[in-house]
Image (tube, rainbow, N blue to C red):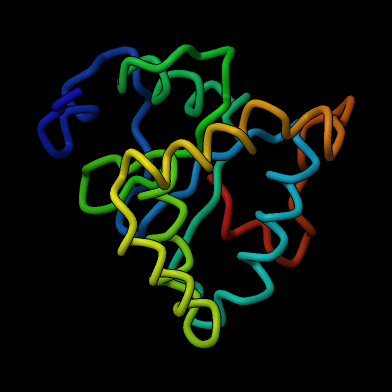
Length: 149
């Protein structure tokens, strides 16, 4: 899939949103994904990242825009500079925003995308079985609400 940067701004189905910082779109019902959102909040000391639950109207619109199924959140999205990164590439880039020692996980980029995505897909496919699912979508802590769209 090749989508030009900021193409979502021309998509009438995508509500306007503040995209001045990179945005992580994650499955808000998945326990692993929600725990990762908490991890990002804790370790993103410079508050460079924003988060968005995929089950929100904006999250679903972005999944559709990027030609992903809006009811299958087996990949999180990293939207930065108007472009989207998915699967292992997106996840490793997310760690790059967290500083040391988490930035070191970017070393995973030495693996070809195909191999890294195979490992990502195994976890993604089994994440609900292995880690569980929440009835309600992730809600940010009140003091971090400004980090969420």
